[in-house]
Length: 420
Ligand code: UD1
Image (cartoon, rainbow, N blue to C red; front, side):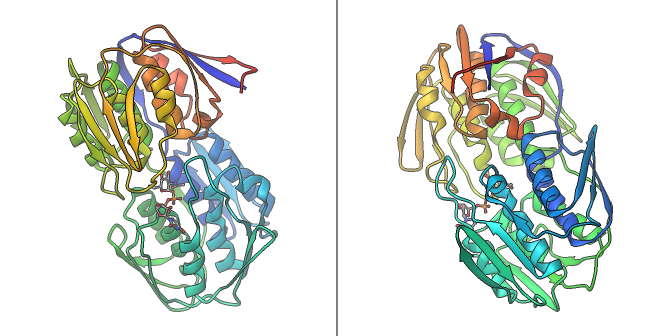
């Protein structure tokens, strides 16, 4: 086990490069199951979640390697269609293998993802989508078992906009017989990236990036080379770090078009932004204005930035209301931020954050990926030393975070720890 030791109060400045998008990688990788052959995916981040997906796909028979940013996936020898509990319990995105396996091989057995640190997170929309396409879906001893001789195109309307269910149904529909129309499809850039890779593989998809996606099934697909998009949540986390602890920070190799909701909220805090293609420079405000946010599906303010926003608002000059409309109980970071001296009250899915003049270093515990990010941000501006335990959560989704932050002037170190 490792922990981070952060000596707060160092001004951040300089340039940091954003890695490839975790959430896009986790969809692009299983898409390779749809065609036998060798795929090359560039700009793949070296992260725990990507390793977990690699291990899962290896148990299915795929060969996967990562050399620098270039990932090679060989799907010629895929012959096992079961995603075991031991891997699915580590990462819910494992459910992404359901659509491709079912569509290409007519059978998938995937462990049912359980609850997670911030609530139940069901997969009913994924299963209903597969059933609409003609699959027979049952649950047995904690596993989802889906079978279909040949999936058939259908109208799939989602009551809730779901990133994962949209991606899964898209991957199932590309090899189905006939036309599938997805209503209330997710608009997230990661879903567009997935759709673009599927189109490159030979799929017929229209309406990507709109709420109605139409897919005409094809008989087969072929392997491709593809370049992953930048991670908008990692970029957003560095921008918030710059606003809280800058100096002037330039976040490079990002796609500012994917960050518009966050950028306009950052401007309201008083931060000065200079946006160019592939890069955002942020100059920290003298004082952070309190700014309310409410999360919503893309292009709204991302739930994956909610914890970091609360960390920033804990140092604002007033009171900010932060509402999460996507995950009602995603607030496990709040009691830990309070240990650092933050003043935050939670009522249902609303956090009222009253800015305090200073935070004080303490020992805090990561509970999930974005919660860990918020604790590190708070530690960067806290007086004295902050110890962030259980950094394996951070390693799931941020590549070399301490090196990147040190490059900006932060005093942060990863040290071995026996504490849980
Ligand atoms: C993805 C992201 C995650 C992000 C989330 C919301 C990946 C790997 N993860 O997760 O980082 O926080 O989008 O932007 O891309 N829902 C149902 N039934 C379902 C599926 C979802 O009720 O079958 C609900 C969820 O509980 C949630 C909402 O739909 O309230 C949106 O979730 P969804 O977009 O599916 O999230 P994920 O794809 O799991």
